[in-house]
Length: 179
Image (cartoon, rainbow, N blue to C red):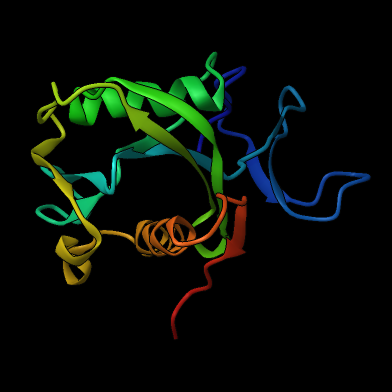
């Protein structure tokens, strides 16, 4: 950070504020402390019967690979509203959310993923501007080697395993950087 977003000063330093335990961007002019916190990604694992809806990405990162509809949560919306918005933007999908299904921390890229499980209300879906293609897949049809993100791979694994059992518990975890 080169300039304070409050006063415009270029007197910004990176140091530990009094009473804090980690470095932050501090404005030497107005005293503002600029907190940079993790980004929240929200999405839905949309299902219809024994199939799930996936989107082929039309944008970077991971252009041309498959994912669940998901994206950054916006200010002023709940995580569920954001997940439904992303599902509409990426797949034009009408979904009824069932429950929060996975919560994954990815600390090395400062992200938190919240994925809901949601039922497709109809088959009137199609690619939005961020998707090249949208399709329903059964477990044996999933393009596992072409999944864009590890969290989406894990969410799908949980889902197909849970379908064999008696419920859909909340799955939590941490995805660490591969060395």
